[in-house]
Length: 344
Image (cartoon, rainbow, N blue to C red; front, side, top):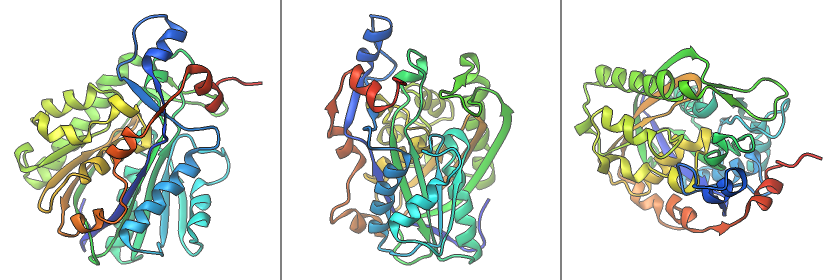
């Protein structure tokens, strides 16, 4: 998919909670041995949720973009604070935006990349001048379940618009979906369920490879035409496996690999990896972005880095890596309290 007129990224911002719990600490409580697939994960405090984190990342994105007005706000999340009340209106109010489209999007871990497609279409059609896409999750995991080792918290936001001081251009996009029951949560259930045997195949690998191969077929690009590639990160292994299966080299993947330190931030996962990659990119770099959402589907994009990025990274931009290094370790008791694991 390509819009009639070019659409650009004007700014981006991320937010990662300072608190971390090690997977060894989680294993100590439930199994008494080992750890998880990653070293630790980011944990939202008891006064943080998907809305507050979305506001933090959105403010940073708008500051980098140099805009004080957006005409659309889409928030992708699967852990919104209200079952019936939009998170996007909370974000809009905090940002001082009232004459704006505002809606929440759901599609598991690709809830926000479908927002990229939507805002790209709105800007590309001329309906709006600029729009905001936010990914924010506190990611739920049943106590003792495999998901608890990776289900983490974080948020990232992007401002899309026209050619005024852009940092990157969205060149092309592809979406691929099927009805694959690998992960779900029914209304009223506090935690999601998953079919572990479906998680890799036919879920993650099939959908990402389908979207990326179609994108390459449509554009004529090959792995060597990209400086970097960013994939959804449910664990530290999957993005490396799918990247190498598609023909990418490890050095193309490394900037966006974050799961080992912060866990799976769900709807923010792929877009957080993109933010970390933009933090080190140079003008002329071409980035492949591929998300995955259980249920299931994948969005793939070609993103070209432009001359405006280095200048806009100056002057107070908070990098993803700096937030990863800024950490306070907590134990399982604090984690259980902050994330509402103890219900009274």
